[in-house]
Amino acid sequence: MQQVLARINRIAGVRGSLVVDREGFVVAASMSDGYSPATLAALGSNVASSLGSALSRLHRGSFERLSILGTGGSVVLLAVGHGSFLVTLLGTEAMMGMVQVELKDAAGVLRELMHL
Image (cartoon, rainbow, N blue to C red; front, side):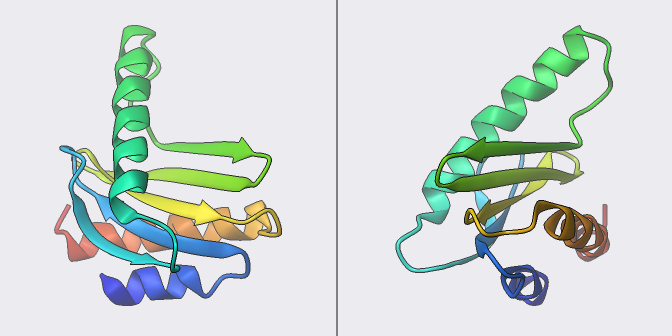
């Protein structure tokens, strides 16, 4: 799992990535100095849970992906399966299209590793 996160983190503009389980616990993390995996996991877990509930009530299926764009960068949440998700922290210089393609591939590998 660490190898998958390390591959993600080699993408230009990526500041870190982690896998979070349905309870919000960090399964694996690879973050740049100065960033807290626990803080990012808590943010991701709260957002994914709220979004999942809203999508269900609106009959829109299950949560798959969310990009949060801020003035200082972005956070991307991508469902891995069974309530687990990949959270990736990006700087403003990251090319979102390239990151999205890589994250989709990484999520597939993570599903296999987690036997989902």
